Length: 299
Image (cartoon, rainbow, N blue to C red; front, side, top):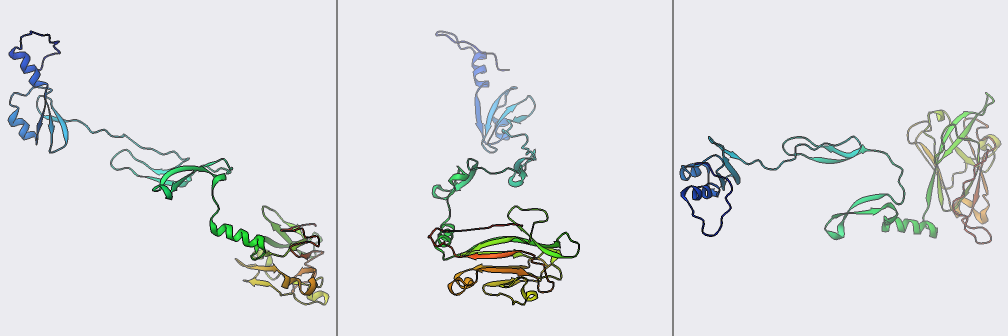
């Protein structure tokens, strides 16, 4: 018989055969398989329930077959184009992968949050701000060495060759940091000890030219010679990764700071340095005040 409805029992109520059957039909039985349940529950009715230990599923009789209760499942996992994640799906095993290129671009500020795996806490995921990021011991040592004058910091320039506006004279143009466009023509620059100055000469405009230094204006074209102390060159000007680098040290300055000014020039063509020059200074002035990094560009 089919299980009856809810019955509100009170003391003294007679337990009839039909009501006892209702109780039995409402029980959740335990069997190892559907066949075992069929053998034992010969009078099962629609709605009879048993737990299948072999399948680890609760099953109900629908009048003609056992129907397993569905396991809870997420219907789909999707990712947006700006989520910073890729992957997802609507069936089976679903994987998500961190995809930085899927995130929007932002300009970091010190209060922005970052997720980290805390190595001191079993790699638990935690948050911090950019402002609270520590400096590694290696970075701190490098900074200390620069401050102490036992190491150097490299300052990079891009150099191009172009006409000076006259239509008959090529000169050097310099770009530094976030500079863009044509650059500054024939600048006068002040360089300090403790720094390396790297001049990138890989621009195609450098084909057939070079960048050299001399204590004489216009170098060899002005009767002078090339200055090579602490100067490093690499590659062919006008080709990828070509550069000229000068490190300003007491050796560069010479005895008693005799070398105070250098001029840049092209040994293949005269006049390319224009009125530009490099003024060399020690790391401290006569009053003992640290000059540090000095970059003065003037046209």
